[in-house]
Amino acid sequence: MTDLEFHIQVDPNVESIVMPENVKIGLMVTEHRKNCSKLSCSFDYHAFAIGQSPFHVPEPLEASLRENTHQSHYSASIGISELREAIAEFNNRYFNFNIDPSLVVIGHGTKGMIFTIFSLIKGDVIIPAPSWISYVPQIKLLGKNFHIIDLKPEDEYKLTAENLDNFLSNLHQDQHLLVLNSPHNPSGAVYRRDELEKLADICRKHGILVLSDEIYALATYDQESFASMRSDYPEGTFVTNGLSKDRGAAGYRLGHCLLPENCSEELQLNFKKIAATIYTNVSTPTQYAAITAYKQNDVIDEYIKITREIHRIMGTNLSREVGKIEGLEVTTPTGGFYFLVSFNKLKNGLLKHNVKMANELSNALLKHPFHIAALTGDACLFNPDDFTARVAFVDYDGRQAFNNYKIRTPRTEEEESEFFKTNAPRMFQAITTFKEFVTSLK
Ligand SMILES: Cc1ncc(COP(=O)(O)O)c(C=O)c1O
Image (cartoon, rainbow, N blue to C red; front, side):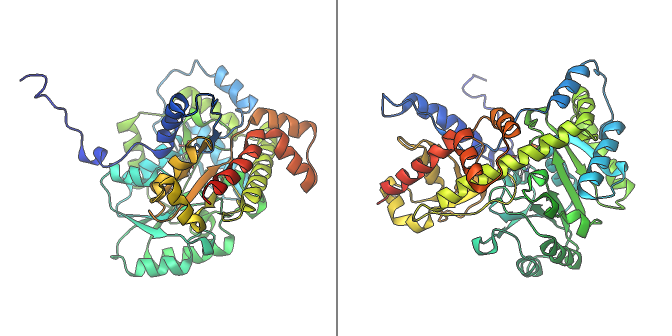
């Protein structure tokens, strides 16, 4: 056989997925930087495509990782017991969950945890859209069936009990897994207690399980108002969370899952089986370090509080100012670090930039002289004729903003606007860039 004849075939499930859009935009940004049509252009782009916390890892967590480098042994596949206990304690303290440590499972980031749950649970997966970028590719990789429920701007991009009930009444009766995400990536919406209660009733009625992705829970601006599906539907809800967003430690790759109340030992065993078969255990030094992130610690509590406040200030100010631009509509985030900008009223103008499909909008925004890197179209499961972009408002120096907040905490709306302007100058500049983009459509 010659080299030419030899062709390594890839599994069709892998071929069915594409490179994640945020990674693609990252590459596109590098490419544009090389090729920007204006030679004089320094191309300092607005980095709104990747939802990474702008903040540093809190010092006690970093120190703890340094101290645990010697933990070189294999460890329990679902996590070391000290960490599972600390996570249970943390969830009880922050969210009043009353979780037993035996229901805590550790995994490779929340993303890894979600993939494990998709692998573990029999049945189809139901995704309300728009949504986070990775649920559907993961399901496709597993060759599972999925269904999309469209979320509507008039419902603040939240799934309503009525929509869910209608949808499930038309779906074949079986066990299915519904993905809920609050605070919501990409809209910034947060579900209220009464909304979750109604959804829980419908899930119970149809025998549907829930994967509640709560990775932004501690970034709910009005923390007291955060509500988890676990409190309303403990017997049917898997909660996932991790260190990536509220502890600035995305690269640590540490996530966890809270298993449903009273779930069988068999379910726990199957979790162990998957972990032991695929990755043995999450890095042992990281697990030991993470104990510090979850045990009562004033420095970490303060870190969570300040970073949440800064997210609120940045999101409120940027979305408000972009929303004032004629022709644009925005969501107002109440948690997390995303909001949506709709260009749907400007569809005719978008044709001037050759934007006929939602996927093409991100390219037009990125082009000289705008250089706005944001996600649109398929990446967030928008319909092809829905010209809405996701803005991840994290384009600033988090450590500097954090220190400045501590030195002089803004107390009024004016002071918060000033804080936004001085600590996130590129995001402030982006308001003008959005205006210029809209003007170019006229
Ligand atoms: C909604 C949502 N879920 C899960 C994740 C994955 O987080 P992790 O870094 O813990 O894998 C992200 C990351 O962007 C996310 O936005």
